[in-house]
Length: 209
Image 1: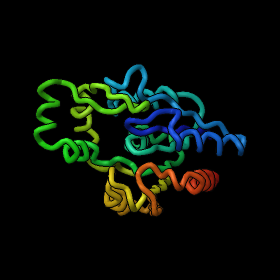
Image 2: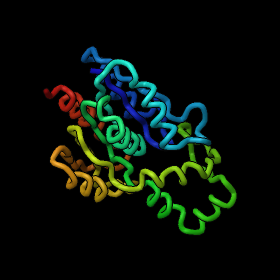
Image 3: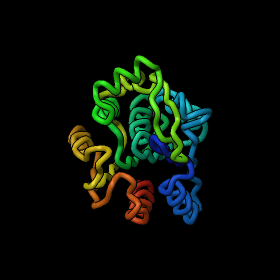
């Protein structure tokens, strides 16, 4: 089996969870692919562009065990729904389902209107530098607005203290299929206090027959 980690929004391949998981997989003699979903630039990032990168990555080898964090979790779940033949299992960390709604709640109605009118809105990139991000990011989310169908064993880990993505979204997702299990941990969206727990859960989940 091949494995890949999909990072979240305002994150990247060198994020804490990505590095911790790469090291943990390496200790088991396993390679964890960590594609840069921001490439070629963060300014024109969309979920569809990320999906295309995952499609390119998974065109060989496999089946694939995908780990997705936040927006990467959203991407992994929808990729599995659209390319079920390439995926074996999914591990989703605080998956950012309903990301369009989260942007709307964060920016407010006026902020969304301004984003559309100007074509750009400033967000922090993986280096925490402000970057104008194109309106296409939000418009593209229309096709990923609901919860994706599930056809693979899927384990979700979500922090009860997550202030970025409500844990209610993951609870609702877990209720949609018996293939989904939900592990709630006392941590926030970054899961910085739970790196070892998450890595151990990932390796255990992917080692199951």
